[in-house]
Image 1 (tube, rainbow, N blue to C red):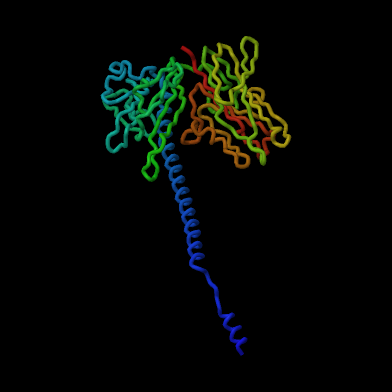
Image 2 (image 1 turned 45 degrees about the horizontal axis):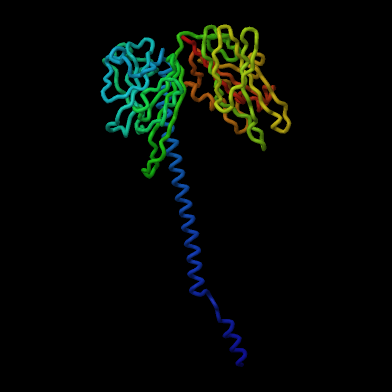
Amino acid sequence: MNKFLKSLSIQKTSNGFTLIELLVAILITSILITATGWGVVAITQNDKKAKAETDRRVELNRALDFISDEVRQAKPIATNASANLSTVASNFSSSGKTPVLTLQIPGVSQRVIYYIASSSSPWLGPNVISRWGPNFNSDGTYSNPTTPANWTYEPLADLIVNEGPASDPCNGWSLNPPLASIKGFYACVDPSGKIATVNLRGKLIDAYGNSLNPLEVSSKVFARPSNVSFTLGSSTAPSIGSGGTVTITQPSTAYFEVLGGSMYCTGKGEIPTTTTLKVTQGGTTTDTTVPSSTKTLNLSPAVGTKITVTGFADNSFCYGAPDRTFNSETDKNTQVWTLRNGDTPPPFAPHGTQPNIDAYLKNYLDANGKVKLAENQVIYLFELFTTTTTESTYDMQDLVVLATIVPKE
């Protein structure tokens, strides 16, 4: 009987957790919850910082696009933005304003001026970029180009910092304003007044009100040439694929810039490409490669020089596919298409997850999706993988090159 009662007593006994074990479990749980919480907070903060940067970049780029559009109409850009304003812009009140871009626009009676000044309510500081010039109609034309007394001072972007570059960034071009006067908005203008690199440096604030490193955007803009200094097939739009050879008709500076392109090989990555210019002058043809680092090549061709663009793809990188080399003249209308002002980009769908053509032309398309270029510019589209137009890989965005020919004085 005693043995039976003892067995029952043993069966009802439960050891449970000791106090120390419970405390250790609580401590571990607390550490895990805290770490998870910090992780969530960090992810949320990074997301808000990224959103703030994206929103700010959009704002600055919108202002930069507006400025660039008007610079393209200029003939020329003043190399000294503050010089002779009492004569060329007599209605402009310069008090408290630092001119950065002074533009002579055909048909406009006084200069159009972009400047920076200290902010005032409701615009946020420390500085604001503004424009003085004729007002616009709904279609983008000027409503009062010859009545400067009625022109307005229109803010374009606020939250512009007081900071500028530590040294002159213009490499021999004219810096506007002078280095000591830069407050987040400055431009480098070439000696001929036909090209400007415009820079905006904006204050960046995250969702928590913290100031982050300033965000800078920039763009190289070409002013309107006095006349077109080259020929390229048909001179009227639409002109898709109408010619692949640039023939220089007066002393010029030729700028060739790789805007981008994508050739993706599944499992391998981006297929390497190169861009080469074939320059024929005095009966001699020279191949000059566009540097992969800067993606820009500048030339000073003489009258009569012929220039074509060649694209090369290292397709052997993609499981031994054949390498391809196509030229803007010999392969025009098939592997290379040209676009001029007013053209509509071809509607090819991109292969796989690659960007479409418009992704590389976004700065050169108007609201209707048509190409928006100066008359001295042309864009080349390359298909470097397949020669079969019905294949899905035929998407005409493997390489995108912009040519700008600026006549010399």
